Length: 246
Image (cartoon, rainbow, N blue to C red; front, side):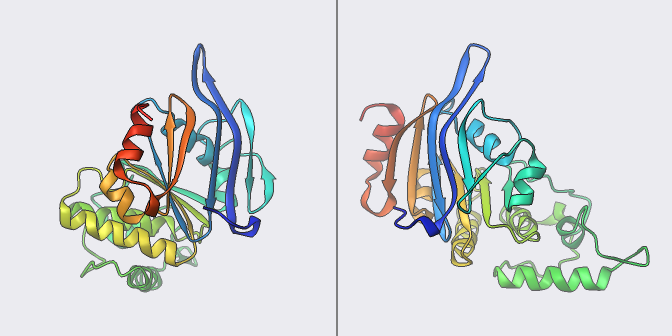
């Protein structure tokens, strides 16, 4: 659990969001600290995606308060979240498969000198960034279409770090990956924590959640129902909270 106010990067209190007659979130609370991986879990319709959209600026909450690094903030659009230092890697990754790794990493933020692309500088930065994350891609000029699922996910996460964020949101990062590729991505998530980033992990895979998270926050029908320290919670306790059996 979070022990000091200084550790908290993101704090949400009483977040509520309705869509017509449907209440997607009702008074949801969430804390994520620096150097911590918090897993957000729940069944379909629990409100996970809506909460992530609120934090990332894709939708605006109807009620509630969000503070970042101890200061109250208003997040009305994705640019607001990015300006604060919140970056999100969505499940679809949004990579251009016909472009190579370097081009994907710097897509939209290309280095230029006198209107000429700085290919050498970008390639060097790409190699340095991937090496710092221990991401193994032999040739950064390889088209993304030829990479494995785990390598693609790693590229998407690395791209999110170019802006030096303080918080990273990962939406189902191991979905549809094999065992070896999943292990690579989980190791990368651990390295994000080691860099002091606040990490919010959305996942349906409880094995992955237990392998890499520090805390597990459970939503059910748009409400908080549990907040576990991963090391002291059994899988049965987490499942019971998700299904409402607890």
